[in-house]
Length: 203
Image (cartoon, rainbow, N blue to C red):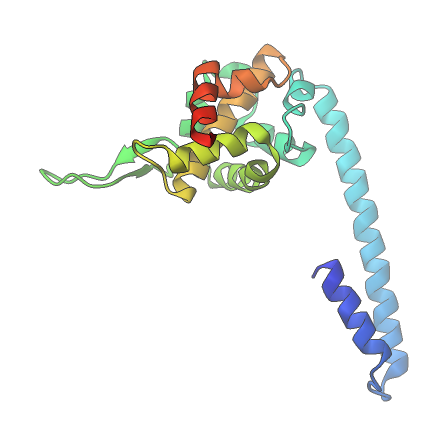
């Protein structure tokens, strides 16, 4: 339910005769629902305040939050799923943990298609996929990478394949910023060579 839909419903209600029976009960139910809504908002604010407090005590989270398009919920959910980043030797281990590493589906002499294994934490995959969607729209570097992956001359990816590849890229960026406590840098994300390739593609 969005704001426009709510405004349309309100406008329709003001011009509607409506039901005249059960008005007292309807008003009571409405007051109850509004009270529950206020309570849920208060609980959410309290939870978010506690999450922010916890994140402030974890080294590297401040740097991870410098990624354009990444918010507190994504960082908190990511760390809740993977734990201490320093226990991993490299970001590829987290990619395998999420089940985003590639595997060829073959049987005997038949060579099948290559896809992700999905042998990992489904909640982590879902979190990353939800995060990458707005990043492709708002983060200039991830937007450029998505355009490059889907339009390059050799082995162009389908849109969903590109988003999955970018999920792996996001894992590596989060891991690097979190472990090295380094702020987000566009060149580090796409590299100078890839940047030149994408500029040629856009020209």
